[in-house]
Image 1 (cartoon, rainbow, N blue to C red):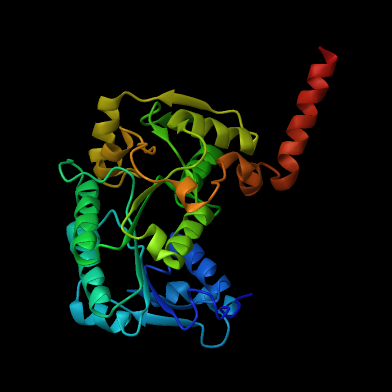
Image 2 (spheres, one colour):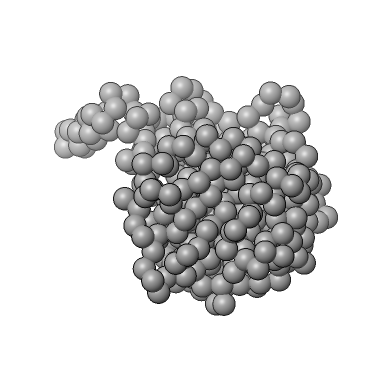
Length: 328
C-alpha cells in the first residue's frame, strides 16, 4: 500500500514525472516511488499500460498523461509542475536517434527551465557514438543531450534487466520448455544481469539525493557474470529439463540476426557480442548503498510455471534422481 511522504522526505510536496512509467522497468520504479510517498505522473504514448498500478496509490497520488516524446508541446504538458523527472524510454524499433537520443535532451531542457530538483536518465551499459548499432549510438547521444541540458542529472547504465515478467529470461524459458535442442548465440558473451527491483531502488535513491548522486554515471550490474550458455543451462536446470545446447558460430549468428522475423535483431546481436558487464571506471551499486541480488535467488520459483507438472515437476524429478543414486 502506498503511503504519504513524511514532512522531512525529499518527496514531500513533490511530483515525479516518469516517462515510460508503464513499461517493464517503469512498473517497478513507480511502485518504489509510490511506496516512498511520492506523487507520480506516468507519461506515456499508452498511459493505460500503467493502470494496473492504480490500486497501489493513495487518492490523488498517481496521474496519467498521454505523451508523444517527439513533440515539445507534449513534453511540456507532461512536465508541467514536475519537481523530479525520470526517463525510462527505450526501444529497439522506430527512430532510435529521436526516441533515445534527442527526446531525452528535450525532456532535460524543459525540466531545467522548470527548476526541477532532480533528473534521472536510464541509459545502458556500453553506449558508443561510434558503434555500428543504432541502439548504442542513440544511447550515447541521449546521455550527451541530457548532461548538456541538465548537468546535475544522474545517468544510470544497467546491464540486461531481469524480473519475473521480463522479456529476456522468459523468452529463453519458453524456448527451453518447447525444444529439446537449442542454438545459443554468443555462448561466451558475459552478462551481469541485474534485478529490476534493484534498478528501481537505484532510481528512487538517485531522485531522493540529487546533491549526492547528481552529475554522476552509475553502471548497474548484478553480483555475478554469466555467459549466455550458462544462463540457458541454469534456466533448463530450474525447469527440471534436460536440453542440448549448441554453441553457434559468430558468422552464422550474424546471418541469422540479419533475417526478418527472427527473435534477435542485428542491433541486439551487435550489442551481445562484447557482453554487458560493468567497466570498473564509473560508480556502481556500492556507491548507491544497494546490494544487488543474483538470478539464482529467484530462478527456481519463476520457472515453476514452465515445468512439466508445474510445482510438482521438479520435486518428482529430484526424488527419482535420489532413488537412482541410492540404488547405485
